[in-house]
Image 1 (cartoon, rainbow, N blue to C red):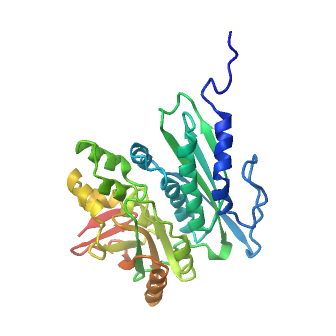
Image 2 (cartoon, rainbow, N blue to C red):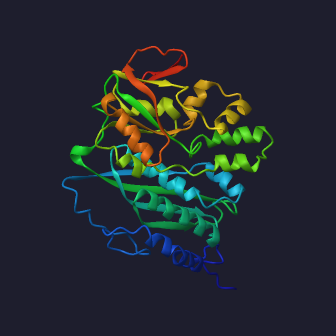
Length: 344
């Protein structure tokens, strides 16, 4: 009777070791001086940065979701790693935190080293953009669990913020200005609906549409860091769109009045809306519509915040103001609070 090996069962330990060897240079580029361990250990060790007086840990975790299906189907593996990082670091940024450490989880039925290398290089690129260290991760082979060629991703971020600098949104008041930062497209949200629309259209998509749908999620860390001292509230427009995310930034007594004509939506959203026959309310609750992040600032600070963000390369513009809860929208506007949203 032949002697079975782990490789016979579908797990190639040598392939995993080869992947670690290949990604080592990209991981080294993300290294921070606080790291005490190298890639490949059982756990990552790090000291806290010495310039923090009273640091608070801020944690976040996320995935890329079914955007991965499009990436896999179109052999576009180089940017989904940035999506993974962005969805995590933009979340911890909302608290005013500096992304510090990042870990990834890559799972597949059988490890394709070439594909995994492309994905993890993208993760390292995202960590460089965010200024955090790719401290480690896990590569799991799960034969029989994932179909051939498929993989899944999860990311985990640890951030740091001074206790007295945490952005809670408590300082937000009526009249404060809402400044939107441009997205690169849908980012990593709404892809179950996007894929349904593509399927209903016959499944095939032109290359330019695929390019728009797979544009990597923007990482807002470095530009928003420059305005943290005057930001009264921050919001990542992620799953749930404007309707579910904006109210997480402020209290029950407030609402956000958004001017829908304050920015030009990327064409991809118009194409999706028309192809799917999607009403405006559903669009606002599903997609970012071209605004990936929102900074709330006092009116007196708004001009400086805009200038600073634009100087950092952001497509920033005023998209609305804070109003009292119960306010009614005017034409071309919608008002969203914890009670729901109203379209003008």
